[in-house]
Image 1 (spheres, rainbow, N blue to C red):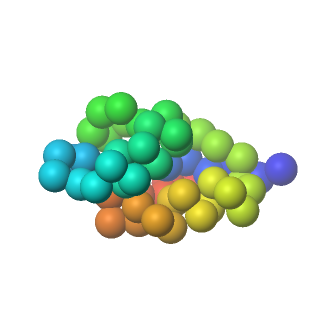
Image 2 (image 1 turned 45 degrees about the vertical axis):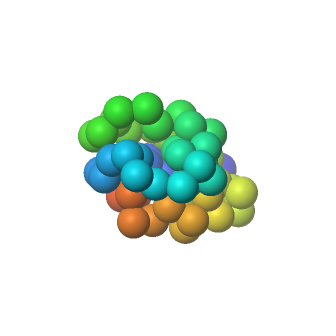
Amino acid sequence: MAKIQVKQVRSAIGRTKTQKRTLEALGLKKLHQVVEHDDTPAILGMVAAIRHLVEVVK
C-alpha cells in the first residue's frame, strides 16, 4: 500500500474540537511534525477535513 506523509503547518489553537481531535487521531501534536500513514480512504478523509492545517509531503 502507498504511504503518505502528513505535516502540521498551522496551529490548532482556536480550532473546533472536531479539528483538534482529527489532528490527534493522525498523531500530530506539534507544528512541523511529520507522520507517515497508509494511503487509505479513511486517512485521506481526515486529511481533507483539516487540509487548511496540514500539508501532504510525498
